[in-house]
Amino acid sequence: MARTGCAITGIGRTTFTRRSGRTTLAMAAEACRAAVADAGLTMPDVDGMIAFQAGDSVGPLSVSRAVGIPELAWNIDVLGGGNVVANIVATAGAAIDAGLCRAVLVYRSLNGRSGYRFGTSTSRQQVGGEMQFDAPHGYLVPPQWIAMWARRHQHEYGSTCDDLGQIAITQRTHATANEHAINRSPLSLDEYRAGRWINEPFRIYDCAYEIDGAVAILVVGPELAESCAVAPAWLIGSADSQSGDGWTQWDDPTSMYSRHAAPRLWNRTGLSAAEIDVACMYDCFTYTVMATIEDFGFCAKGGVGEYFSSGRATYGGDVVVNPHGGLLSEGYIHGLNHYFEAALQLQGRAGERQVPDARRALVTAGAGPYGGATVLSADRP
Amino acid sequence: MDGAVGAVAAVAAPPSSEPPQPLPDLDTEGFWQATARGELALCRCHDCLLWVQPPLERCPSCAGPTSFQPVSGIGRVFSFIVVRHPAVSGFEHELPMVVAIVELEEQVGLRLTSRIVGPLEEVEIGSRVVAELVALPGGDFHAPVFRPT
Image 1 (spheres, one colour):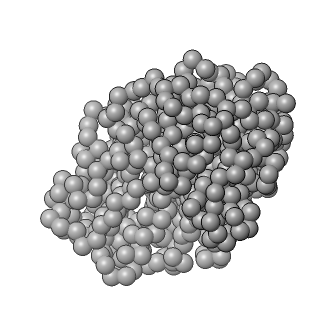
Image 2 (image 1 turned 90 degrees about the vertical axis):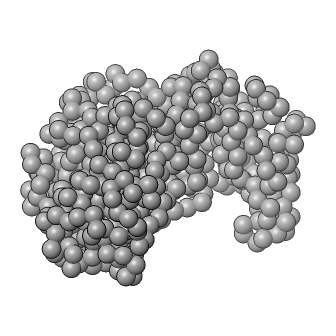
């Protein structure tokens, strides 16, 4: 997708908690209702839905029934993690461009803390496929894989745990102004260093904060976008890159999927990192931000720690990275909350944490060999 | 699972204290048959001699037939972590433990992710290691681990 005439208009979400006490269906329905109401539309205006999950949530047919949509002209339920988010947002726009539907709800709903947790594996007894070689060593969860990659970056570029800490600290500072964030306590470098080890070189503060909750965004075509109650956040470009090389065979873990997706995205949009005001960088772990910030061209290899510590990634700097606090501090809704935040910022509705004159936002989604990214603009393409 | 395509969550299954076991298929069973014999063998193309890990029925480069051939078991640590949080069941009493990506000497980029045994402080990127086979608790499998030399 080079560009579509589509935009995100309405956005919705539940509260983010450690234990929702609700079904993923109930939360998805709440977020979808909120997104449609936010756009000033009604349910009959919605004829498409797309969602992603890992066997831990509900599909569009259940949710459409729950919100009173009798039938959908188009729907897809994608099996995947944060790596598929940019692709499903782009696919929603492409479906509208192709005339298959006119308004698509994109949602993610999960009990990511009280239910199935991505960072643990306590029930998988037999592991097939490529991971059968990792299973005997207990090497089965993302905080291991991405720590392994971070160590290699430290070896090749001299980056440090303190550099990773600067990312966590900056994002936590941003979260202090976000009432929706699960963790709003300021974080110092000393506190970061005192954090317990998960998998060296990762401490607890390097890991996304797993939570329960749901987010929905409404993607619509240009005519509908101009008539909504909120300003459109235009989808002006998207690029994906997914590799089968996996977490062990990928040749160079100092870069991620973004080494391919970034040039693809900048070529399609004619833009560069310098023209981005808000960067919602997928941050399942601090190192994911480090590697992708480099790949997207915000700073040179090995320079990310200084980029954050010197204020270039916050208000008054080059770009504001994760003004909501990101998955590290706002909470882990698998990256769809990054699209919520990007739209909110471009619509000028972010309140205390509003990035001044935010016109363009980069949203990235995914880590390691798998991911994609979107550029959103306040200006109609 | 983050980024892992096709990951399936076992939402309601009870926690276990047994380590996970491999589930071989027709393409991978040769690896486990070899470790059961006390041998480390990896998938290799008959025609172009490319080592292929994870194994495939046919070579991804030339589509030639493959079989499992012995490797030296000698390699170097490409990267490593020190696992301290018991995220995966079955290893609670073994932490901290080192897990490393080991690049084998047979081919650039030919890698296995395995535990490193021996003193933790001896492990660093570039360390020379050699494979040994150990029985996995809770099942009938043997797996390679690596020891610094």
